[in-house]
Length: 308
Ligand code: CP
Ligand code: NVA
Image (cartoon, rainbow, N blue to C red; front, side, top):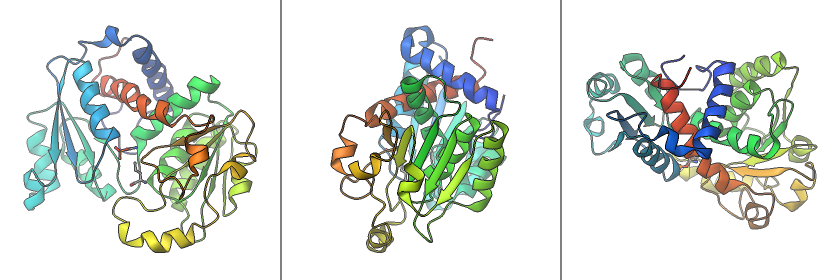
């Protein structure tokens, strides 16, 4: 079992599948797990804002019998220049787990390099692996086995796209990604996903044509066009992403049984139409709920508190 969870690749393919099974059991029978993390503490460092990540980790830790500490970057000495590595060394003498939401992915890597306790990436500029655990749980709830299902991602080649590529490929799914020119995913991450998908006989396709990506998909996913930290690029991105909105016309290229996913927060009328976001194919609130269950499973696995 891994000690950190930064890109999601630290979990073996088999452990990722085990985690999803555990998350489903936690959702069905939460009382079984009520005291599993009694006496344990989770420190949560946030350099950026959050609704779902903050509340689902804090509530999840409480429901497992443990305690979570919210540490806004401006409230701790990181905000005054204390190094990430000193912070990790100190925190890991007090707590059992550290979760961090950071700007630079290198910051979460530095935390992990110097922490004595497991570090969870709660979103960085490159990856959002906790979200994908919840997304996979949500897709499995609808379709059963994940293998050979097809997820299409339409929008910015950002942290969400990267984590979906890796997480879905490692679940045996095929993934197609449509991004505008200049907003493609990192090639090295696409290559890693492609190698994982190939092990299952599945493919990874990248394109600049949304309809091509969505054709025949079981799940259609989008995310904001300007991520946290890119607010000053909002106007330019609105122009560059014209034609990339997930609307009913685009959804019509997917399978009739397809579901719509979004990590949230959503901007209706930008990356997704209100009709799709709030329509019958949308599973966005199941996805948000599953953050709670999937992360409880993750914390139990990282702390070695799972039935063998
Ligand atoms: N999806 C997600 O991570 O939401 P928050 O930014 O609210 O945590
Ligand atoms: N790509 C988005 C995801 C938010 C959950 C961001 O980084 O702001």
